[in-house]
Amino acid sequence: MNRVEFIGQTNQGTLISLDDIVRYFDNTMAAYEVVGEIDNISVHGNTDDYHHSLSLRIESSDIGKLNDVVKYINDTIHNHQRVYEKNFRVDCSTDGCCVNMFVREEL
Image 1 (spheres, helix red, strand yellow):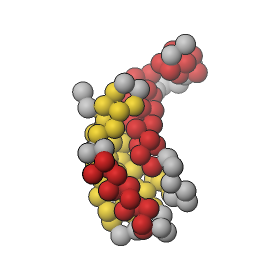
Image 2: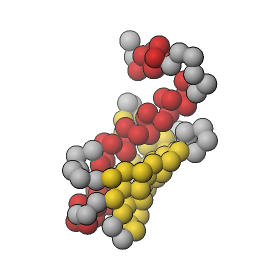
Image 3: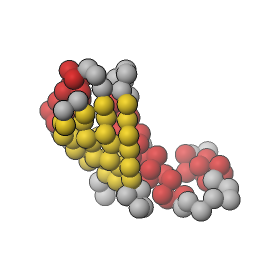
Image 4: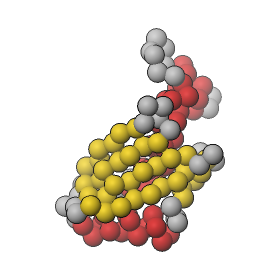
């Protein structure tokens, strides 16, 4: 069973479209691949109406780790992340003790 079939079977009786759920999940996992290894962070996220993009505000008391995330995104992965055989655009900016991250699948 692939992830779409699995999500489809667990999405019984809801009004959220399966495509929206999969897009949200994929965008979230692309972001997680970038920041998932960092301890002691707080993440606040929002999506657009159709879950085509994900905006995150990542906070940490360790500014060095946040700067490492920005450097990794800009200098190592060059704003691209590949997850589930899909390509995602990842952009970020620093805002004091926060990193603002924007994730969207590249079509």
